[in-house]
Amino acid sequence: MQARLFKNHAHIDSRGRFQRLFDYETYDGEVIELRQVSISDNPQIYTLRGMHFQVSGRPENKFISVLRGEISLVVSNAHLVDKKSDIRNQNFFLTEHDKSTLLVPSGLATGWLSLSSNVLISYLMTARFEECSYSGFCYNDKFANIEWPLSPLIVSDKDRSWPPLI
Image (cartoon, rainbow, N blue to C red):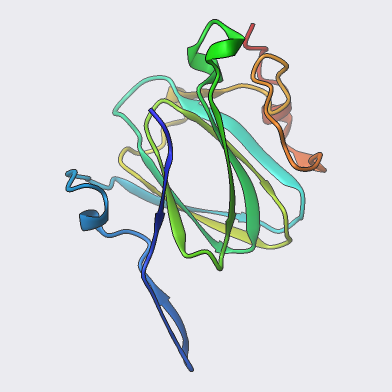
């Protein structure tokens, strides 16, 4: 179970850019039923959100695209394994210019660090976000051993206070 990066088609001319964020034919003919579309607006550079994952309910695949700015995004299975050697962290550098969408399979944890000001991210999800069905672990959890490119300046109290994985 790994996240996959897909390049999107973009038409650019004197008026600007028109870009597809999602096309069901791109995803190996899978039947994908979107249930929610959300955005995350992050005005401050070095803002960190995560690490979040779903614990119950309808499986939630996420299609993540950066609409403005740039981020370092991590996808992790650290909350699903017992041995450090089984941890698989995937690191992605995503920008508004790379015209890509990251498909994150349900169950994996995600988090990102804004590397520019005024970052805008789109989330297309196959399940509705429900507050009672998600959890997380701290972005600097020693067991998860995530390598961030820089230290965050802004992290919510909730994201700082997740319990340790082990």
